[in-house]
Image 1 (cartoon, helix red, strand yellow):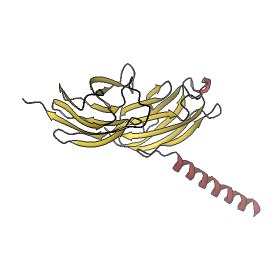
Image 2 (image 1 turned 120 degrees about the horizontal axis):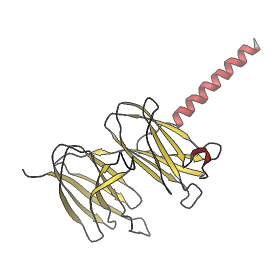
Image 3 (image 1 turned 60 degrees about the vertical axis):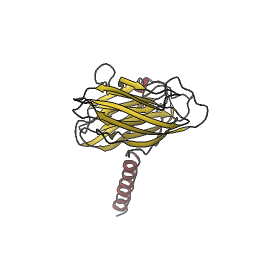
Image 4 (image 1 turned 45 degrees about the horizontal axis):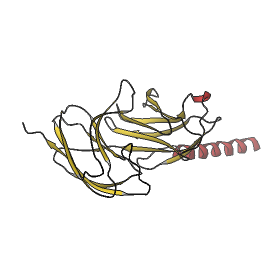
Length: 241
């Protein structure tokens, strides 16, 4: 009888533990989670519910900028458990990918060389789903120099990309395609606008029939020594035929 009760208690504890682990390991868009890469646990798994054709961004950033987690890596797996893309970064790593189907996807936060790697430390992992842009529908928002925002356009029509901005932060606006060949999971730049003196700009015409990712972020060689923000408006305008 005691054995039966003990087994029942163990089963209950196991169920509660698994449920808690599953809840902790689920990614919600725009809600960062933290984890730690160690030599004993160098591959942490997370899951999220995805939809076909969504463009998702996975960002893995060390908690300590100059710490020992200098070679983080991200693996994205499809609902069948097959690897879709892997990217190994330096300092931090970001994957941008278009999901092929509906289902539960797995994200593995790891490091270069996996079990043989030497990078260890805490990290923050964030899932972002790129917001959709359509022609002639302006979108307004705000951004700081510590953030990056993503949008996606997948229309058939060619377009002109326009922006206006105000504030102390002068972000860089880029139009990109998703690299699926040479360095899968990264962005290939098509066009770029920005600059500290530029408060508006337009560039085009850019052909349609391609999935474009618009990224807003601090320019590579801009250095702000305090937190600054910008307000902006984006619009895609159809090219006159």
